[in-house]
Length: 115
Length: 114
Image (tube, rainbow over all chains, first blue to last red; front, side, top):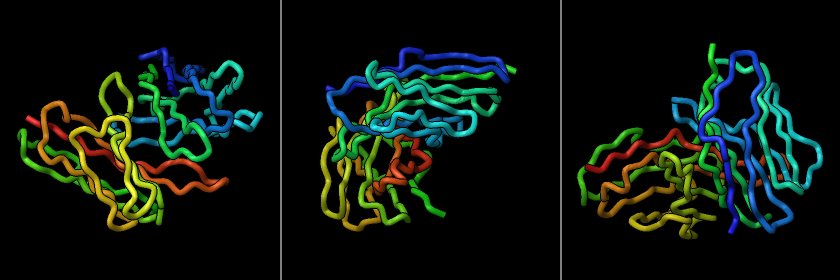
């Protein structure tokens, strides 16, 4: 079975500091897609960053970057210069296999940015 | 504006009273899906559709029905809602291309069954 694990139910970070959210997964597939979604109190699901498993280079989007360790099956999200607007639930999600369209989500990490 | 539109945003109903949550996308996406979100469980897939008239069960399909008669619409039907279906529901759509892969989500429907 393909599983996604976010081991940190809640985290907090001081404004302007850096925080890393962890995500691990288990799959026997060789090609897959990885995502981080943000869900603020408005509950909208917002795509933060995405990565294809075959790409060696880690994805970066402004203050958000990932550390993708394929051998370790790890996909962590780093948020630099944390801002109050980063307070949200963060979900990692995977699309396992080239022909699959089912997103598998982790259970989420609640991040609080403290002024 | 490219978007997925869900209605209603909030719904309170009584046990056993049939209801429909609508979902519509304006991006001509082939693939659409319904998820439910519960505290501590993340999002779980209920049903999905690969194209018109093609639907299949996700991980938690019991108590739900769907239909895909038109490409843009994918309603979620609860024939006889029960309190354990109280949840936050999301519709999502996707059309996979190498340069633009991912899902667009609706704004969610908060359903309470009493």
